[in-house]
Length: 286
Image 1 (spheres, helix red, strand yellow):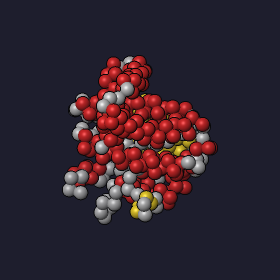
Image 2 (cartoon, one colour):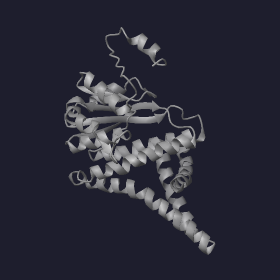
Image 3 (tube, helix red, strand yellow):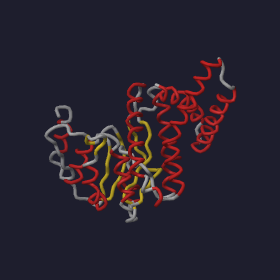
Image 4 (cartoon, helix red, strand yellow):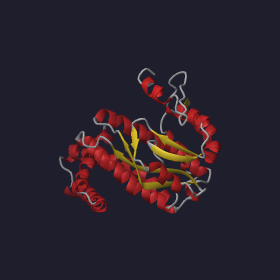
């Protein structure tokens, strides 16, 4: 509170702002719900504290939300600290691919499966139907304190709303610059993905077949990659060698994906994203 008090003081007398101070730290989800219930607009914009929005983000998201069937829309995320380390450069490219390949493809079929927390707009009338379910989610017998953006998106889709991606609504967010924090973040996101996949299983038949394939790929892909890597290590220990085509196949698939991204983004730096595959394999095996 001492750290944010100067900010509160600046805006305390500005009628455009209403500052809510909860009694203690109850986590992002409950703080978010308190703000939603205290606000009154037809649309609610969620922005993480480490995120900076481009000047036209609100306008572009609002234009997308004109369709009453859309319950939520997210903007494109970039790393505000991209140039800081080799890891932040890789994460920035990872965000581009996640937004402009994965989310863009999902939006083409009417259902972005996760409207990311740093920049997402929601329809109040839709939130009113979902807040109680959102607030009372449990995981392994305890109130859930992670994966709130994916869970809220799945609830939106289950309620019959569409979710969208707006590629030119740019939001810059701070990403981990060291492997330790990055690994913890990825593990938290993976837990959210696997947990909410079960929630979405009954939903998938109602959506386009591509989305079913996409969800299966997101969940089975990392597991198959880890299994393949373990099998290669086992063969190396037992037979003393690994078939040459194993590494060649992984390298070829990686380079094809990175080359396509480099062409689409018109940036050669995406060829360097090929380093992400060995790093990802290493993290999966930890």
